[in-house]
Image (tube, rainbow, N blue to C red):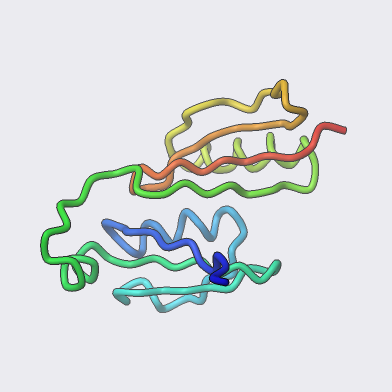
Length: 127
């Protein structure tokens, strides 16, 4: 049985994208900003990778780009962390889709966009 193992992103500019995800707390090594492929393993064992458009075009010659190519959610420790992380990201000039709110499904929730237009959800269970 195949199991999900990794979320992969297609990125326009590796350095800009990695800076965004470092802001969210991922331990991405320095000095990889000019690589075509970067991968990290998160503390909970999930792998994330970033692939340049040029690399993807080499694999899929008919790939035509676009934005919003993946969505990922970051679980925060508590509702206050959602608010703090959202303010930190938006304060650095990244685009917001939805300010933090208490969702009817029992979570504090916010949505921002990474530099490539992918939605990034920030959430925590309501206390």
